[in-house]
Image 1: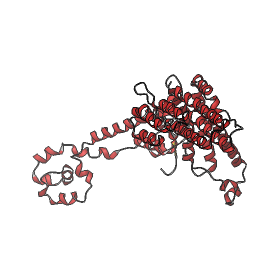
Image 2: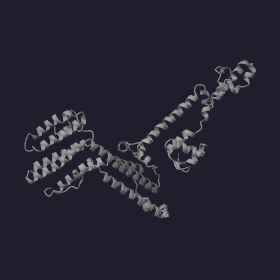
Image 3: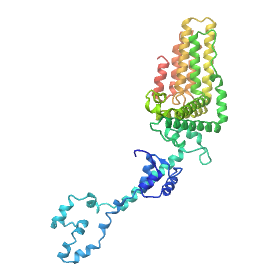
Image 4: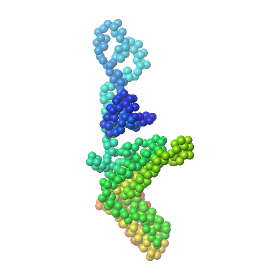
Length: 437
């Protein structure tokens, strides 16, 4: 379909009443405002499958009528030779005696030759069954993405976190992908951003108590890093960057996502106003016009980025709820590492010891990032959480840096208390590198 067609155009095309087509779309869960509404290509194909007449399916049935057969058997040879057209349709297996029929059958239509071998009634029923099954599956898919937190669809939180994709967000917000028009582009982005913002608010209200608990638990890590006078600028910058990373990994981030979506929405509205106030003659004739040269992100990329930001908040929320105790241990240890480094500097520790301490602290950060992938060093086995054991082993190494056997003991404990419980090869590779084997 070259361009979107309106309901009244489709009704005229398939010789059906436009109300009948609108009722059909409503039955499929597709809402249209009136007969002037345009539909996309998928909806058009759905209407076409429903209302396209299929006269070719019924054409082969008349040749199957067996009334002429008795007449051909009882009449003399002269009378049989006259209705030659009927004999062509019946395909007499003894057509070798009638060369005219053979010559006409060769250049003829293949559908006529196959009419006796295909049951078009069954084929038609099977085809309709396929359409009905596709429509049913489509309705279930649409219903799934249209979940809005009502009694009919209570698990809205799980839907937004696990199943939302750009198509689902566009469908639920009724956004049609814009063409080349920049004005239409910014209106579509604005509508998409508004829908994403509403979804986050609905999720936040549905889980406000758990989110408040999560916010309080990550409050310290989410606040601004306070530089310490005894640290160099590079050291303060290092710890500030790590603190920001931990909050982005384990904090809920709803406020930041809200701010970014609102900023994008405001920008879209400003661009829309510019198009309302523009000099359209200059826009059409001047290639250096601001609205012409203004770069735009492809709409499908914009939809994917917005969708990903919407999914990021629930993903972190559910991860925190599942691994709350381990995450709190991570945050507690992070500040203990910083405090321990400050004590070493205040005590005048040698530069080699300070450097080794920072190397171990970096291992702690790497290990935390590894665990945050939600697939490594976290699965309890035999009442053991390998990642917790790894933290304890690393802390023991940190507190025993003056012992020349500390590295050997660290490697021994890492094998026995952590690697013994792992089942994934990449976990072994990671810990093998971490342990400096």
